[in-house]
Image 1 (tube, rainbow, N blue to C red):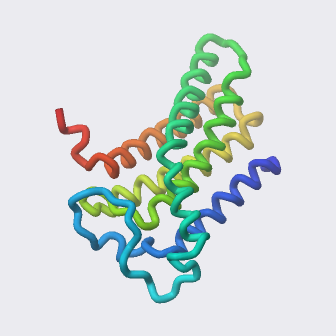
Image 2: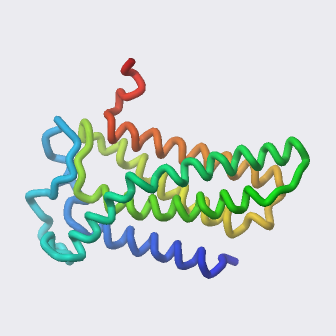
Length: 195
């Protein structure tokens, strides 16, 4: 059974996803721009059927809130990676501790907030190379990590120590992969090849 706080966080994530997919720029029109630089400028052309007007307060507020994605994205990365490492430390040392649930709480809530803000941030942004595969993998790995982290948070007391370690390692790997694709969006796909 999902705790009520986890339910409301998942509800907020789903609501943010629905709102952000209904605003302009989420379709092909945002990807058909020059590939010279990253921009967060609004799209010039808007789809015919929009229920949020580009000059509305909701549109501007959603766009502004999305900018916080860049600030909060570091928290789930750090907390989920640390939670995985601490869990395996406890398994190997055969010790119990209270750090992992705290790290998982902060990691899961941070992942949900980061995913929601990321959807808001991406709806009218254009990234290096217009590579929609990068955005696709970044978006869905991040969203999937948030969903899995919330499920793990809800079921953590039912999982054995090793099972929890495996699941947290998978969450850490997913958040690291999402971060890699996000860095590729921000700095270019050849970011790691430059010395």
